[in-house]
Each structure stands twice: as C-alpha cells, then as structure tokens.
Amino acid sequence: MELSVIFSLIFFALSIMQRRELFPLQNTALQSFYPPSFFFFIYLFASPYFDFFLYPSVYLSVLFYLFILFFHFSFALFLSAFWFTFPLHLFLLIFFCLFIRHFFCFIFSRGKRIREDRGRESRICIFEKEKGKWWRL
Image (cartoon, rainbow, N blue to C red):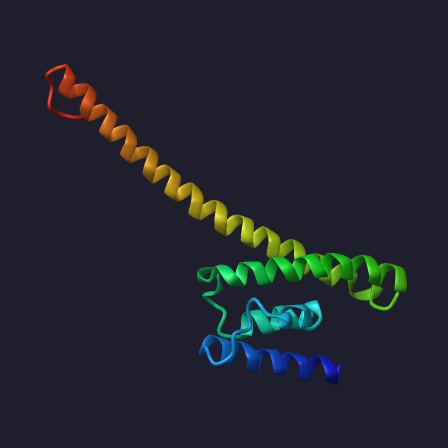
C-alpha cells in the first residue's frame, strides 16, 4: 500500500514537471512504469491533466496503458495475486472507455452536423440562383 502511494506521488510530481515542460514524460520508456490502475486513475484526475484531451501524445500514453492493463487482467487472473481487484479494474476500464467514446462521438458528430448544414445551405443557394431566385428555402 505504501509503495503504491509513493509511486502515485512520484508520478504526480512527474506529471507536474511534464506539464511545466521540465521533464518530457511522453515518448519515453517511463510510459511502461505507470502505477497500478486504481492509483493511475487517481493520478490522472488529480494531476494537471484535466485538459489531457488537448494533447495527442497523452492519447498514446493512455492507449498504451490500457494495452498493458489488458495483460494485467490476464496475468492477475492466472497468478491470483490481484483477483479481488478485477471488478474494480473492469469497472474503471469500462467507465473510462465509455467516457472517451462519448466525448469523441459528441465532438465528431457536432462537427459533422455543422459541415453538413453549411454544405446544404450552399447547395440550396446555388440551386436557387440557377432558377433565378435569390433567397434560400
């Protein structure tokens, strides 16, 4: 328990240093040394990564972590070391994936609707001008 807390504090400090651009955390071997998943989510939401959607390199870090977490599930089930935390890990993973999916679907669908509306308006204008009318439907 104490070791996990120490790891969380270390990675919290690294996240602050990386946020201030004192230490480049992304694209290094340090990505493979994330703490356990429960403390990773505490670190993720308690650190200055509230705007982590703005940084593409953080997407890669999170995807890499989820990839490691998938194998953590399989090894934990077979080794029976952390089998009691499996429901917690599964809940956090599903919640996080659904949140990411909802966020990106909202952003991309909103942009697609705006582009479709603008394209429809311009087509209506051109169609009406060809018929000799200058107003929109």
